Amino acid sequence: MEKKESYIEEKFGTLLAQVKDQLLVSKAKLIILDLMENGNGGKGWDNWEMPFTLNMQFDARYTLAHHTYWVTKIALSVAQMFEEAMNIPINYDFLIIGGLLHDVGKLAESKEKETSFTRDTEIFRQFRHPAYGAMVAKQHGLPDEICHIILAHAHEGDELYRSKEAQIIHRADFIYYGTLRSHLGLK
Ligand SMILES: [Fe+2]
Image (tube, rainbow, N blue to C red; front, side, top):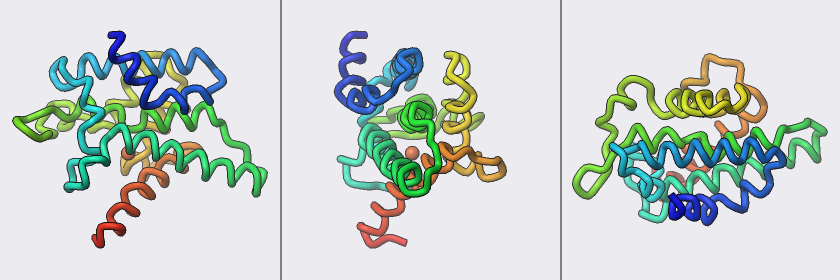
């Protein structure tokens, strides 16, 4: 457990330190620990080092942990611009925790298979990571505004009204993904 806690601190500590509501921080850590314990048939904690997407193969450095950190950083930059230049208020606590947890369900919907990862799991078939992550967040008592960000970050949110924070995380997610694709010369 201690090793997992120090991993979370190492990877996400600088972002968690920007969250004002300490109850949200401790709940977010518990959710991450829960999925690190229970994902991948109970041996999933190092899944943060799995590729951030299994749709295609990127360089190994683009792990789920890297993606999660940088999507949240991109979202923070965008949010600051809206707030400072356009006077549009943003709930940074919701934005940061939503960013850190948006893909946390991937720890559960994916599992290791031989030397790679697969989504051959019931959680992938029944829920996919946005819905599963939102459900786990709700179970741990996170506010609906954060569960909404997690649920709506991918196409599950396309038919919903997205909150400002959900919209920013959704777009930040695709800035990371789309820019990497372009960088590699892919459509
Ligand atoms: Fe993502």
